[in-house]
Structures are given as C-alpha cells and as structure tokens.
Image 1 (spheres, one colour):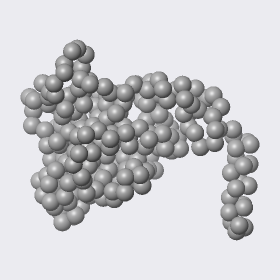
Image 2 (tube, one colour):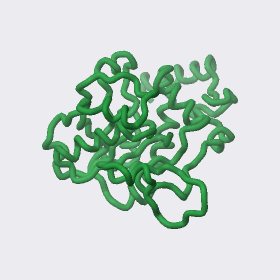
Image 3 (cartoon, rainbow, N blue to C red):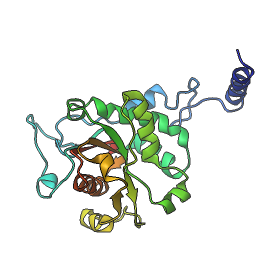
Length: 243
C-alpha cells in the first residue's frame, strides 16, 4: 500500500471523527458516504402515472391512456420529451436549493442518484442517445457560483451510463432571474441567450439535455430549439425534478 493511499485513509478517518456523517435533510447519523437517511429518501415524491408524455406534468384522475397536456399541445415544443422521476418538493427541492445556492456540492451525489432514475423511463431508455448535454451557465453566473450544477450532475450520470458529456452549448447573454416570470416572459427573456459551440459536434446526433429542475420548460425549450436548428437529430430532456 502506497504512502499516498495510507495518508488519504488517515485524513478520511480524521474527517469522519471530527465531522460525523449525517443526513443532509434531518441531520440524523448515517454511514460514511450516505447523504440522505432511509426515512428521508423514502419521503421523496415519485412522479407516477398519469402524467403528460411530453413534459411529465402529473395529473390527478383515472386517466389510463397516454396523453399530452394542453400546456404542451397549445405551443410549439422542440424537445421530444422532458423526463423527471421526482417532484420538486420537500427533500428533493431542499437538496437542489442547498446544492445550487449554498455551496453544498456534496449533495450532487444524491441528486445524481435521483437524476439517473430518469434514464429508466421508456421515453429515454427505448431509444439510444449519443451524448448528455448540460444546460450552460453564463460566465458571470459561473463566477458567482463557481460551478455549473447541470454539468456536475451530467458528469456523474455519464459515469453510470457510459454516455459522454458534450458541452455543446454556450450561454451568450446574461439573463435576469426567472423565478417571478410566467412562461411567456421566460421565453422572451431567454430568446437568443444560447448558441451551439460547434455545429459539427451536434449534427445528426441524438442528444439528452441535462438540468436540475423543469418548471415551465422555457430554458430547455430554447436550448432544444437551438440544437435542432444546428442539425441535431433529436433532443430529449432529463432533470432531477419536475416543478
């Protein structure tokens, strides 16, 4: 065993002694490397049928056949589908918030676990894809946050599925926060905010966009439009959660 390996294990042991592992949600004790305890993990809300085949918006009621919601049917949508396994509530929402805004980057691991569940959905698994494309941050926002949450999640999921990450998009215009904007205002705010870095890298390729949350879908819609205009064969979307 090398000196470097021994030293690394010593530091990990000291870190565990000084900062005992705990659930990031309820603070209860966990095993090393476990960021969410079993009760908190079981509390997350899965998206179950019935839901819109295009955007995964869940609906109440006894709908048994596949359907597209009126929100998707009434507008032009460039992505084939947007898939999320979980609702943006409770533990999932809190982890995303702490990861993005509070610098708790260790939470990328449970978030990537939840994101990877979307790959099991038949809308994704039934058709092979060539690359994972993270939604980019503007360089100003990147300097503020010091990382791109979509890129970090895409890298972790890439290791699991074996599909490469392709940084195909660049955010060319800084946009104000969209939290208080409706769908139409968000689309207008994002118009012209993205471009493809190299057209040849996406031409005739089947791509899966990666982001943390799907709310109105305005961001992934604009990214999808730009990718298809550059020659991509298809664009689907996976996110950790559906707002």
